Image 1 (cartoon, protein in one colour):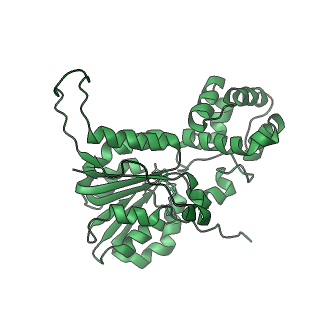
Image 2 (cartoon, protein in one colour):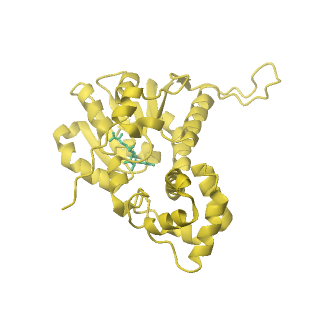
Image 3 (cartoon, rainbow, N blue to C red):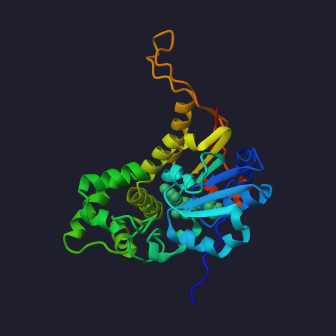
Length: 311
Ligand SMILES: C[S@@+](CC[C@H](N)C(=O)[O-])C[C@H]1O[C@@H](n2cnc3c(N)ncnc32)[C@H](O)[C@@H]1O
């Protein structure tokens, strides 16, 4: 019998609700539906005329929502889509712009626990890691086909792993004998070559790096933060929770660029580019979970919440 995966505990939920909900009769976009933690909390906080359009790239999150979404009737619309397509998603419900946007990046506990997805180094399964199974390349494809320098770049850049070069070399030598197909293939290789004290942290970094590469997660986030503003009403807010320093930097930089879009050289006394700000940063520093929240939900450990308002 399959055990039910542990419930996904939404991270920084009260902080998000408090900062993003500025109109309790409004319509909100949850671009990372997951198990629906944010979507349900939004719907419960809003007045009966308040509405949520929720989207997830993973068809299984959408299928799971079919079990609980009917309880919210017409107040909730669920969509299987990449959040980068926010404009198309909203226009399919005849909505031009919403009263708030939330993105809670990364994976849900359900995805991590499902060995058949290949996201976890703790369980044996295919080296897949695609959030959307319509994507063409899996983690196994990358490991078996990418050039050594490309593997090193992925491990170093996305995983911040110091032993990236050595692992890339080991993988390239190994795959000449047999392709890496399962998480256990990759884990066994790391265990064989690395001392146990390095193994656990490095395995988690390498799996994270591969997942980011397979799903082009940083590109998705950058693209979304370029285009989302036209889908947000004026004086309304966007909240992004990230779990990786590169993601957080992308959010911080995008918010700053929209708050101060001037591209004139610093040494000229006045602005020539005439670019006009379209956002105001609400969280000068990222909001981090309290010790109490981390004790209750260790997955919240690396979370950082940033919020900006469209002006
Ligand atoms: C951390 S979970 C969200 C959990 C949710 N906030 C909750 O409380 O249940 C992140 C979700 O974002 C989805 N996701 C990641 N990248 C996405 C993208 N580019 N477009 C849409 N969904 C994405 C994942 O499939 C996953 O279900």
